[in-house]
Amino acid sequence: MDSNIRLMKGNEAIAEAAIRHGVDAYFGYPITPQSEIIEYLAKEDPFTKRNGMVVLQAESEIAAINMVYGAAGCGKKAMTSSSSPGISLKQEGVSYLAGAELPCVIVNVVRGGPGLGTIQPSQADYFQSVKGGGHGDYHMIVLAPSTVQEQYDFVALGFDLAFKYRTPLLILSDGAIGQMMEKVVLSEEKPRDNTVPDWAIVGKTPNRERNYITSLFLDAEVQENQNKRLQKKYTEIRQNEIRFEEFMTHDAEYLIVAYGISARISQKVVETARNQGIKLGMLRPITLWPFPSKRLVELSQQLQGILCVEMSAGQMVEDVKLAVECKIPVKHYGRMGGIIASPTEVFENFKTLFL
Amino acid sequence: MNEEILIAGFGGQGVLSMGKILAYAGMMQGKEVCWMPSYGPEMRGGTANVTVIIGDKTIYSPILQTFDTIVILNQQSLIKFESAVRTGGKLFYDSNGLKTLPTRKDISIYHIPATAKSAEMQNLKIFNIMMLGGLLEKLPIVNKKFIEQGLYKSLPERAHNMIPLNMEAFSIGANIVETIHEI
Image (cartoon, rainbow over all chains, first blue to last red; front, side, top):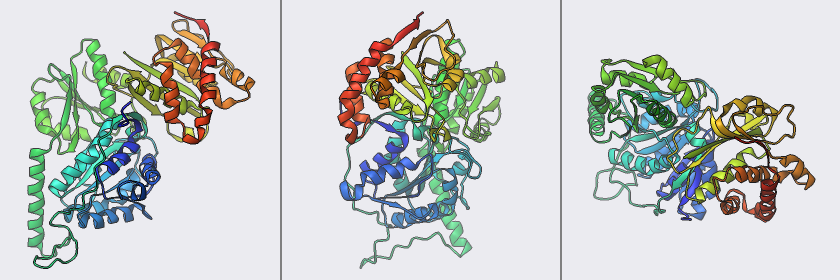
């Protein structure tokens, strides 16, 4: 068998992807259900045994995100990962990264909350991820993997997009995808690239203006110009980077909108419905920000109703309602607190709500 | 078709690793595989279960309420999961520690006395691979030669000297599985 095909946990796939993609540094602090990321990296020890990637367990989540800020400011590919409570701790740093326009990848393997919550999977961090968990007018690009293969692939995609737009990027996973094992096709290992972007802080070089990285602009006019610059960038991202996947939508009369593990569950629901002659389809946003609103509007012309399946009290459902301007019924079904709805349960609720 | 399997028992019985060996073997045979553990507080003592899906089709939901095949390794799991076998499906159990036995008539039921047999061989660690041998005898979804390769992949190198013994246990499992009733 091809040695580049492996059976991996979602968390391990992220860690291996970081090494193979030539990421310069990982800073993290363990928390269930994502500890396998730092565990795998520590075991692989890429700094001494592979390509020199730095792996460091920081003293806290806050320290880790600020290490990412420092490394990113030097033009390095830096990443961190955590789970919900730890991601909350990182939010100040995330806002600073957005304000200073620094690229990085942050992984959130979501668990149930609020507070310290539970260690079981959840999708209740949607608002925090797409509406800005930190302060100020900013967005992160948010990628939502639904397979272990995507956990692997989105690390490379994440860094490409983060550097293209000089923005922090979030991979919004969940405890189920992080813990489950699936077949992964690995890419060839890339050597780390020592060239740095021209905006990076690399020490004073003669014959050029100094680079300056900050998120502090005391003059309100300067700050507003910075805000306009960010908004222009977000418009560009909205135009170019919306990603989604459709499943049996061609003749669909009803649509499920779901991401991550809920999308996997919903595929099974669609299959069950189709076997019973119900024309159900699914749209899976891959980018949660920017959100595939335009495609939803197009699809809504043929639809009688939309069901949002999320492991939360209903968060993404608001963006779906905004997209279709409530012109058709939009309902939500979800479980909370670490409980995952089974396909049977979702299908029964779909029938109760719409048929 | 994809085969949707649940293995349920106590933490420490080798439930998760039994599923992992099965998933590795399936992958090496070129199949689609998914291994979804219960990773909650139960793995720190108490019940543990794992869903393994193997087949030729894209795997949709790793979260399921009913299964094609369920392997039952303790009383709690029998109570909780006997009803979760789909009509026409298969239930495998080891009677050790069971106060009641499965009663359904619309599914095939098989007994694998793996605890007793592995105790007789004075090595309870080979219990789970013996169960796997019995399971694959009646549910040949992966080729046996890939189980050995799966063991090499899923066991740490220090345990590789145990693989011949495990393969012996696997064969014994295939021999001791008894059909309670088949549909």
